[in-house]
Image 1 (cartoon, rainbow, N blue to C red):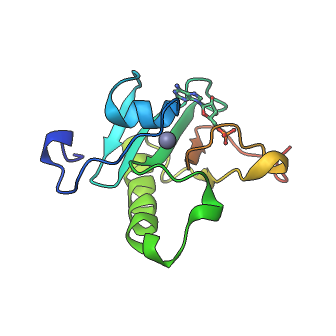
Image 2 (image 1 turned 135 degrees about the horizontal axis):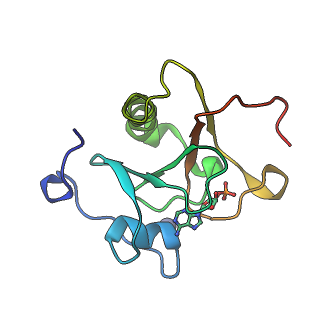
Length: 129
Ligand code: AMP
Ligand code: ZN
């Protein structure tokens, strides 16, 4: 079971005005949350591209994967652990799934708050479109 938000051990992050994922983290915008830790919130994508499509976001606003550095080691480990937990909870750990960071225009990034896509529940094709 994921830790409840009220048991957070860290200070609340500063939301960036207008950022939808900051609003989901703060509870200002509704989302179907499936997992939470001190560092990460995971919720269902509003326009799922697969039967299982969950977004894993840091509570802290970071624009994208280019913003990650050595100071984010704890966050990166947490993203990996939450991805495994969500995959197991959603029943796709054995069948397989895909983890994706989209970066920049050619990467197809549309929301400027770092997020990892977890997609599963159907066979994925490669290369992606
Ligand atoms: P990307 O194209 O990698 O930036 O992915 C952004 C994802 O966020 C898309 O798959 C959208 O469907 C999803 N998305 C945008 N707004 C919301 C929202 N309010 N709740 C859940 N998912 C969202
Ligand atoms: Zn944000």
